[in-house]
Image (cartoon, rainbow, N blue to C red; front, top):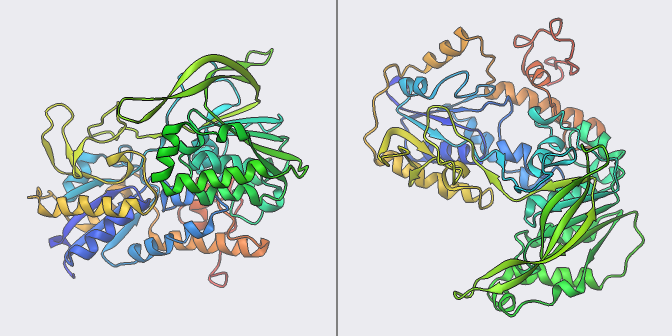
Length: 478
């Protein structure tokens, strides 16, 4: 509508899937709505850009739908704006009827074992962000000069990082993996990758599609111990009810029956093992091995299975240990937070005060920071719709200054170089152009300086920042 001051104004914090699904649900529910989407990174799309594996381009195509949402005249994108630092939550409440926290669960869960902080032991989430070109993780430099890597966990993130470690440079070069990661992995000395799960193969959380990809690797054999595929009776009953688990076990039985091809790398799945400590080399600083305890499955009274240690310990060589045991939310300054669950306390998306449990007017949440890190990308759609339905039934507080230009003036006064969606399109076009020149889907810009430079020379002066390496495209380049 022409007078956006009278529209329902909503600020969405986070430009990942849950943020865009929230915006889309608002647009479909109300014509008189104005949605501003904020993200602390210059580039939108959250985990689709920085979490989905670079060799899974089909999954990333969902960004076309998010781009359509961002192109609606009722939507504005504010990239490179960190809520809690550049703008406070209280300040957002002065300019919007509602604020929706949809910033995901960016932290990792720890193993809580000795040696976890040695060089060479790191979260799989850091490794993923590194190879996907996240600006904050470009300097991670995972040690790839050893032959042995161990991945703790059997979810999709675990198999993603193992697959990236096992792929050849030629395979990786066909993806949009970050250039610095491609260079490092091209020189990688990793030859043996072990994926370890604390329970059995029937209880593994990865999906069949991701599992099958190991059988298609150009330069790696895949190994499953046939003894691990002799299932507990309760696992057999579980298998009869779960199609994904059935398919997974069938694929793994196929792997176990395949003769080795003599490939230079090997990926091994090991089940019924839990990490107990990570051992250092003689320097006391770097990972040299990991001690694993053999588990057994026991059936609880309710029929569920639990893994318990047998006391039998094994020492596996490892110079790289990647833990992939789940994500965990982080607090937002100005919003309540449940430290134990790693979420913002809420009821159907309505944010609740931490202690009293009363709703906080005008504050909402969606996605992983609402419900915890579970589900696939599409799961966030129904989740966002629930939050929006709650929001639209509430009596919302009136903002002191709902003018659309008010937030722009605030950011300008503070010297914040924000990125709008048209500027993001400029970055996008440059990445696609660079990718086309190399026969790749895209070549990602990684540093904030390069991203801001590509967005427009008014944001960054190359003379003041000699680190800029990306040319600013001219009109002809577009």
